[in-house]
Length: 283
Image 1 (cartoon, helix red, strand yellow):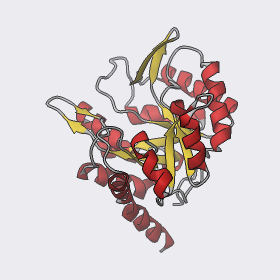
Image 2 (cartoon, helix red, strand yellow; image 1 turned 135 degrees about the vertical axis):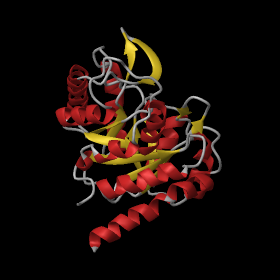
Image 3 (tube, one colour; image 1 turned 90 degrees about the vertical axis):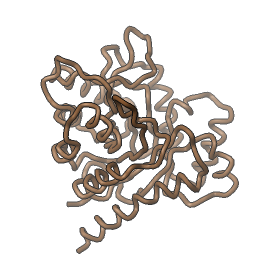
Image 4 (cartoon, helix red, strand yellow; image 1 turned 180 degrees about the vertical axis):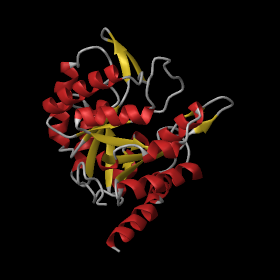
């Protein structure tokens, strides 16, 4: 099966999150990197150092935007001021697609600045899908929605998380940013089989994947992005790539950030899985 039937960006390979501790190294050394993912909200400004760095990165590298504040599942209307600033950044970066999370996080204009899980109901799916469509039509760029890690569940849910994700993306006709680490974290917190999740989503809609490290505590696993990817997550990633084909993959490392080379070396471990699938498809 060809990779990325949803968006067709099969040549993006393995990317890294653009993070402040690495700015100096990247700008001075110009290391090889397939692409960088930026947090959109960090660059939705009128000027200054963030945009100076971004423009320097854009001269040499591909950039993909990833958001943390669209809150597609919130009951509020979409924030038009946020959308205007986001569209201005989309035009600056020429991002081939845009991603944000399948979550809610605002009530009556008050923002939690957190990625809160959804109740998995058809009413929520229809509402969320409509907001995704509205955002995509305004921004004029493909949208992928990311599954979040969660630490609580709603009693009113009448479907699984993967069924809910599938309903939303089909109704919205959008893509999936499949966070493999988040699947693992939530599966451990809520006692489901992560392979059931991977096997039962629309694989042709997966336009990007995330891998990351996490932290294990007594009762929960937290999605902390502060460590290398563990073996069970790599195994899930291998299965995801087999199901979805060659897919743009990004390593997230957002806390206790080591050197650029260490982060890049960890990310490049994904290449053997991508190459294996590519070889199998060629055969």
